Image (cartoon, rainbow over all chains, first blue to last red):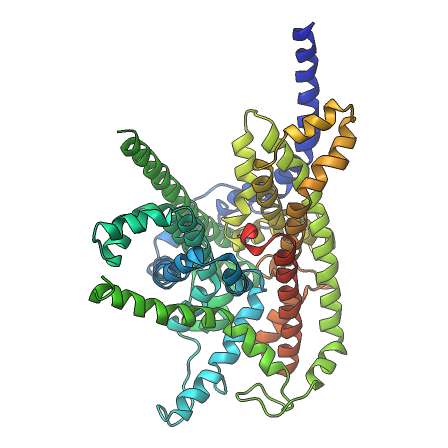
Length: 297
Length: 266
């Protein structure tokens, strides 16, 4: 009787599960899996047009990976990802740490400031920087006003400006992931270290940093991926001088209409970000395992 | 102990870095809002005089108001779509153990880490094959795809903490399943649903990186309209329009803060 009831229950559960999940699975299959497979196929087409093209060739990948110019752009893309991640860590860690240790009442407005750039439209943020760094912008007014320069300087259309804007956009991810991990580190540990006459630097290096590593790593990964995928920011802030893989893809597909080459570059970018994600996840898993072992021993 | 030079250096560094970071994070938004009130004809600092003339110009500009309407409509529909797909899926992922569960979860969350430019051209090509390019439906599908991760993540986080004995108590009192859902489950999940709604709306409303590929000539979203405008020239009308976007976004964040606290979203 009981067994019978659970049998029906299982069949019912299966129907309910299907009913709950099927719409999502169908949607993801149509609008995510199929388009990605389609793009992968296009990236292996020969020639410069996808329309009515047939055949299978790796010439697009050879073109990208065998050309100094494109490899340079790829290196620059990785460079922007790394630089943006490291700068975000250096300036984001103190902020994330202090947010975690603040009482909730003091945290509120600071958190709103941190979340605003995440939710605000990217073009609006970029436009703000264009106004700020422009010839008649605030930064130039201050520089000239202080007598540092005779006339307004050209602050836009260089790598440094792109880096500043990328960091400003993605820094919140670093702050939030550091904050969430530090929240879980008991302040008692820091007091214990202080009782053992460790100064704050030692406490930071020997206690906080190892425990906060998972948060730091996931923050770094996110900032790297988002910065390396940027194409609006390099286009508007960097101008013609700063090229990243994302902006090349955008150009190939929307202006030059070379879909096979654009798709191949897109896949190189995807593989780069996926490799970083998978690598970071593996490192995180290892961290938890080694920590589990030390705790067990 | 407080006299340790390394400690003091660390303390001073923190004192300098933190205010600079907060200032840096909000300065683009502050600059735009400040510039939008200028009475002059150019975006410059300090602004020349104070006026609302550029807001008047923005509100009477056909292209901007049409695209604002498109963006609001799109964000509402995308939110409804993402919620209806995401709520049931989050329930299924939380309450059932089955093969492929992790795969489905990862696939749902993947638009967060797949570069938007890759997703954009993949969808653009696919929609063209389906003869759905340059249609509102195609744009909407893309927006549902990118708002889904936020919905599923927010709801999953809340479902993990859900005390199922409350549902069982209701069932023991002979409430039929749909009544348990309506009177117990959904009300408990309401704060999470509300914050997922607001977050999905804001994500769709502000998106430019996907819309730039899927946008239609008849219906341009506001961020894409701003993008095309910025590429050519920028004047105070753009500052006024952007200031409106900032105010809407800020209002949404404050709503989340009032409903559940911003910490939950992060």
